[in-house]
Image (tube, rainbow, N blue to C red):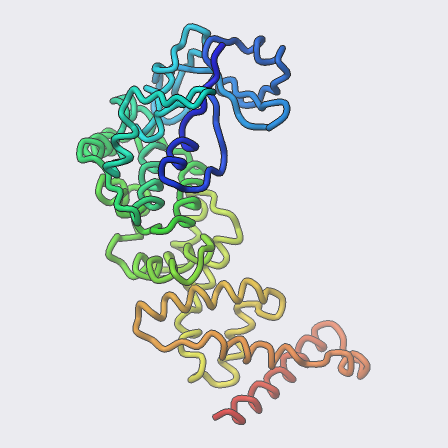
Length: 370
């Protein structure tokens, strides 16, 4: 039995990046061998084991064979006869197909180090085409490494186009699309995720309402230096969708997008223009905007909304002051409710009275600063 460090840990170490997690491959062992050594088995599709002390993942070396469309259509061979080179051959990119012995010796049968030095993202073998998730993964990798000068090998782009043409992307599972998109949104150049999809003809299939040269993409680029939060970048990306309510809800349903992402994106799409015009609104219009955004109960979400609006404003050449809107919000939130309750207001009458008092305070404040 031999154990090797594999994949991303080696890649990131060579790129002088923090190594966030380490994955290991075990050659020449069986499931029983691992269990006898105290490893805990996890995973349904193929055997993966957690180290009894470190909790790191150890997988038996495996080969795979495609039996039907989609990323789940594989049969796995994890017998002790599977060699390390067989396991590395099934991986997506050459830079992810390197291994290291426990003594620190590099094993690089598919020239990953060379591609890393040349800043090339290249598929290991034609088997890349058997898993449509790899299109999303390579797009995410470029979103992560584009700032370092990485590019995708022309032959890999050609292979990805053939995958799209054959309908492989139609077999993508919603959760996997969202997982890769969410991770890409957190990278240094998230727009590159969509640029790759456009280059291999997958963008229109996966995100038909997000053209690569549209205002949403420009807002995503503008949001990147403002925030690292995927939820805000996502809201900026979706702000210019036609028929926003239907479009946002349709996309959210298609990819089972979490409610908090869906809600912020929808609020941003529906209300960003009013927010950009806020200083010119009447007290009544401004108060209605604040109620529509539920700022009195969701202040943190309101801050995220303002960050998305800031990105949108920069793409429109508009002057936007998020601090002004925050001051406005805190002014109307400062209403003391206890005297109203003492006067006997309750239920809907109390809610109406609070809104009335907020309007008075807001109108007075706006008059005072005009």
